[in-house]
Amino acid sequence: MDKIKKVRITVKRKACYSDLIEEYENPIEHACDMQTGAVFTANGWQKPEGLCDSAWETLSPFVMALAHGAENFYDGWMKNSRSAMISCNDGFRPVSFLLEATDEDAG
Image (cartoon, rainbow, N blue to C red; front, side):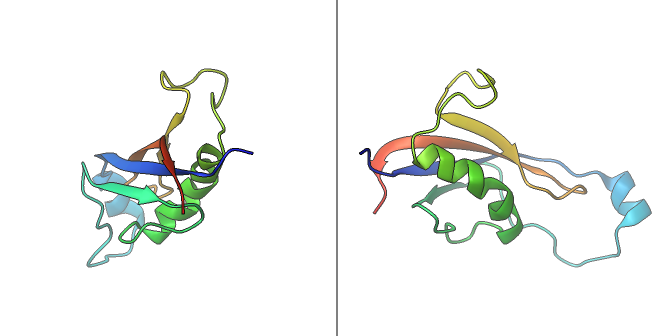
């Protein structure tokens, strides 16, 4: 049986839809701490420290699948079959994350 692998999570892009925020969102002081280029490492089911809780809820099924050896999501969608590009579920300021299975065993 193969061992569970660590998964690298890289913040690739942040979007901000000011028109939707203006029209629908109640004013909030602080919305998102994610910074483009930030890298996190998932070790199994553990949410990496500093990663947004809401983002983790969206990413974790793909992280776990990659950690357990899944490949080729959606029939060849990604050039690297051991990766996925997933966005968090914030409709006002979505963040795109690149998930990549590593060869390092989770522990």
